[in-house]
Each structure stands twice: as C-alpha cells, then as structure tokens.
Image 1 (cartoon, rainbow, N blue to C red):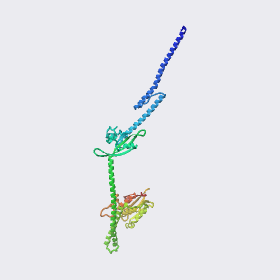
Image 2: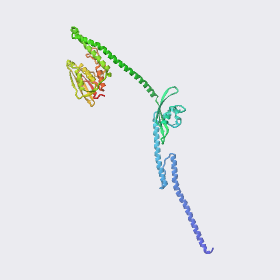
Image 3: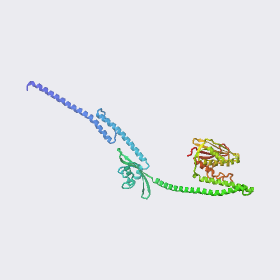
Image 4: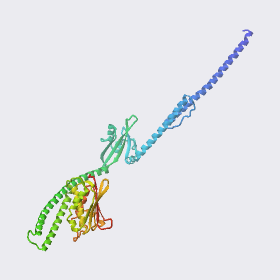
Length: 462
C-alpha cells in the first residue's frame, strides 16, 4: 500500500464508524420506541384482564382506557357490557329479594326443592317448625319422616304433568291423632323451559276438614229433618182439611135448622128464642169464617195460581161489592181513587182477598158515620203504591208489626168489642209477599184517628 492510499483508508474507517454509530443510535431508538408502543398496547389489555377478573369476583367497575384504536373500542364495549351486566345483576338481586319476601310472608310452610327432592330454600315458618338445618335434606325425610319418596307425593305428579298440582293427604302422629295436610306444588323452569325444581307449599287443613265433615253430617241431618218437616206439613194440611170438613158438616146442619126456626118453618118461637137463635147464627158464621181462614192459610203454598195482567181498579171494585150490604148499615162512606191505567201482573183472586180482608177490618173498626178510602198511584216506574185509609180506632205504634202475626188480637181480652180470628192480616201479608210486594201499617198522618195500610206491588210478576 502506498503513501497516497492511506487517506482513503482513514476516510473509509470514519465512514464505517459513522455508519456503526448511526446503526447503534437507530437500535437504541427502536428499543425505546418499541418499549413505548408495547407499553401502550399491553396496558389497556392488562386493564381488560383486570376488569374481567373483577367481574368474575362480582365487582363491577369501568376500565379507564383512553385510546382511539381497536383496543379503545374494545374497552368501551367492555364498559357497556359491564354497565348492562351490573343492571341485570341489580334486577336479579331485586327479584330475588322480592321472591324471598313473598316466601317469608306466606303463612304456610313453603320451600323450594331440586329434582332430587332436596330442599334448597325454606321460609322462616318451615325452619321454625322443622329446624334451621333442613336445607340440603330430602323433603320426604323432613316433612314426613320417611326414608324414601312418598307414594302420593305431589312432586312426582308435578314432574309427570309439568303443571301445578294440589293434594290433600292424612297422617297420624305418634299419639294417633289424625291431621290433614294440603300440599300445592308449582314447577321451577330454566331458560330452556325445562323443569329444574319445584316450589312446595304445605298447609294444615285439619280444622277445615273437620268443619267440612261436621257440615256434611249437619247437611244430611238437615236434609232428613227437612223431609220429615215436609211430611209433617203434608200431614198438617190433610189434618186441617179433614177437621175443617168434619166441623163444617155439623155447622151446615146447625145453620140450616137455625134459619128454619128463625123463619117459623119449624113452628112459632118466642122473641127470646129468636134473639138466642140470632146469636147462634152469628157465631156459626163466625166459626165458618175462622175455619175458612185456617184452611186458606194452611193450603196457601199448595194452591195453583193463575197470573195475568189485570186492572187494579177492577180488583178493588169486586172487593168493595162484597160489602154493599154492610156499608149502608154502618153509614160508612167508601171512596176509591184508582186510575184505570194501573195495570199489574198478579193472581187476581188472591189479590181480591187482600182487599176484602183490609176493607173488612177497616169497616169493622170504623164507627158509624166514618169513612174508608182506597187510593193507588205509581211509586216508581216498576211499582204501584196502594193505601187503604180508615177513620177507625187506630193501632198502637208498638203493635204495627204484631198485627200481621197469626191469631194476634190487639184486644185479646174475653170482653173485647171486636171479633175476628186474627188470621186475616196474616193471610193478607202472605199473599202480598207471594207477589214480591211489601205491606205495613201506620196511623193517619193528618192527626185524625184511624189507620193507613200501605202496599207496594211490582207491576210485573217475577
């Protein structure tokens, strides 16, 4: 190598060292750059891993990753999932608390059990009755004291049908006392709709079953007593009819011969005898009316009735006509204020008997020169209000309800002024009530003497 070549060699070495220097700086720079970018990538990933581990532990907290690349988008999606999962868990916890509250509020023994019949949850009453350690034990062992599934186990039926089942079974304790337990089972299903367990509610219905048995026996006894009463009622009606017939026959003879003696057919009679025979005839008529009333009352429910539309004024007119001989004798004025358009569905004959009875009482208890009036009007669209008003002696307020009782007499003394059987108003009330109506009595509201009998009847017979 010549002297002229040495400068070139030195320049070459300088270039080589410069190149090596640049190469070394590039390597060091790349190391720092790689470390920086590696840290910026690994740190978010590490935070994602930590967040996942926190969720696995039940800890919900967001991931703080501030990047705008794919990792940042992944972190944002993770935070959204975390929020939704947190809300879902909150809803699940709330639902669980509600279910537990419902379970605890049940006043019966309530428990949940899995497919193996092991108890997984029980309310406080179940634990108080069977012990706090029943969780994890077999239901048939806890509730029935058996080592295997019961033959009539409702859980078995529930698994077969997949629906709610209810059974009642009886058992005896060590002292031989019988009890009745009602068990209701409902299936628990997983997200695929498959049965994963069941809820069982047990209720002691011993008292209820005892009452049911007592009621059943009482019903049978009442039914038997009712049939006996029907037979007795039939016998009573037949007895009343027979006695009435047997009494009427001699009364007819007594009346006939009395009338023959009164008109002189059987010979002349003295004035004293005529007076006595009039008393006999009057009492024969009274006894006949009483027998007719008793017979009417006893046969009332068995009589066949014809219901038809009829004018109320026509019924009242027929009743008034029955007293055409008695009215002039007592000089009593009768007025009827009833419109022709008052039409109702009724048994006309029975309703006529009502007004005959009321008019008979009004005339009987009204002195000579008094008055009796009948008025009727629409109470409302469906009812007619009838009033029978007299100026008689009136009725004490404490007797308003009693006058409708059978055989009741306001003056029950042996010296009473007015006769009667005490059955007329009882029959009247029975007829009115058969027509789904009501009847009551009050004294004259205008301050004068006398009474007012009120009747309200439906226009249509039901």
